Image (cartoon, rainbow, N blue to C red):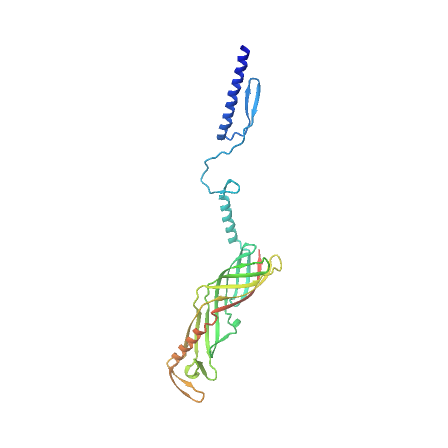
Length: 304
C-alpha cells in the first residue's frame, strides 16, 4: 500500500511539474523564450521546446509604415533619408550638358535624368537672332528692319514616350526679348491704313517692340540620337506662346505737317509726323509679330 501511495505521489508531482512547465512556456512571451526548457525529474532530464513568439517593445519614436500584404512593421526612416539623399545627388550631379542654336538664340542647358524616359532641363538661349527670321518683316504695307536682343531662360521636361530617339518636350520660358524696328519707305511714302504719307514729311520712323507675356509656355517634338556612350545630337521643332505685342514708334520731327499722296500730287493730311507714327505703332501692335514664336533648334549633348 505504501508503494502505491509513493507511486501516486510521483504521478501527482509530475503533473504539477508539467503544469509549471506549461505556465513557464506561456510566460516566455515576455522574454522571447525560444531556448528549450529543461526540467529535471528525479534522475531524468526532460527538455521541452518552446515555440517562438512575437514580442512588442516600446521603441524610440520613428517613422513606421504597416505593410498590409506582408503583415509586418518596417522602419521607413532609412528610405526617406535615402530618397532625400538620392534627390540631392541628382540636383548636384546633372546627367548631361548641351549646347544649342536656334530661334530662341544661342545657348546651353543642363539636364537631370529623373528616370529612363524623363529628363528635367534648365537652360538659357539668347543673342541677336533677327537674321534667323529674315532680318525684316511686314506690318500691313510697311516693311520694317528689325534687330533683336533675346534673353530666354527656360525650364522644361523632355520625355521619351517610346523609349527611343523620339522626344516630346514642354516647359516655361521667361522671355526678355527686345526688338528695335525701323520702317522702310516705298516709292517715297509710308502706306499706313491704306493712306500713303509723304516719307520726307514723316522722316524716319523708328521704334521698339516687346511681348507682353512674362511666362511663355512652349511645346516641342524632336529626336535625340546617341552617337557614343557620352555624346549625342538633338533637334527640336515647336512653338512658344509669347502673347500680344506692345510697340512704341517715334518720328524724327513729330511736329512736322505731313502731306499725303493721291498718286498725282501731295495734299495736306491734317496730321503731323508724330500722329502718323502713332498710326504705325497701332499697326505694329495689331500685327502681333511672333505672338507664336516658332522654335527650331539643333545642338549637341554630353552625358556624364
